[in-house]
Every structure is written in structure tokens, then in C-alpha cells.
Length: 125
Image (cartoon, rainbow, N blue to C red; front, top):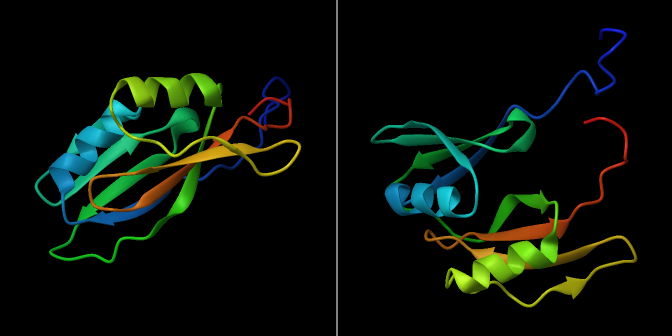
């Protein structure tokens, strides 16, 4: 780590989500704010803040459930309002603790993604 770069030297590179609706899941991820990197017939790669890539893998069948990750946003209430305006049907915002609020949103393949309020340390990330 350089003397100027105060960020931690490691981060999550890839998070994987299987889907039986690759095109719809990729379009959904772009709609909620991820950046498309690669879209192929069996895989789509989308980028999140910090450079983490969400890899959507096409499967003929899946068992939808809670996504194996959650997403954090800068302004949870503004994000929730934006999703409502887009017709995405997020759950109501709930308080989890003094520091955490969240809501959930179902993506096209049926996985439920939790969105949390920003609670980074305040240090460079």
C-alpha cells in the first residue's frame, strides 16, 4: 500500500448469483444502478462501487431465495423512493439497529436482495 493510498489493500472481486432469467436479471441490475461490463449468452458481469463484479450465471433451473449478499447505498430513503417510482416494489424500510436500516427487493429470477443504509467507517474505502 502506498503512503498516499489509505484504502484497505483488498476488496471483494466477484459475487455470483445464479439465474434462470439472465437477460431480465441483467436488465434489472442495470436498472438499480450497476454498470454492465460483459453480457454473453450464459453470463453477465456487472460492476458495483469499489470495483466488485456481480457475475450472473445462467442456469436452466434455480432455487430462488435470499441473495448470498446484500447491497449498501449512500442514501437508503432516496434509493427506496427511486425504486418505488420505477415500479420495482421494494418492501418498506425497516430499522435493524441504531446504525442500520434496510429494505428488500425481489429480482426477476426470484432472489431477494437486501439493501442497507450506508455504514462505512468514514475512512477511505
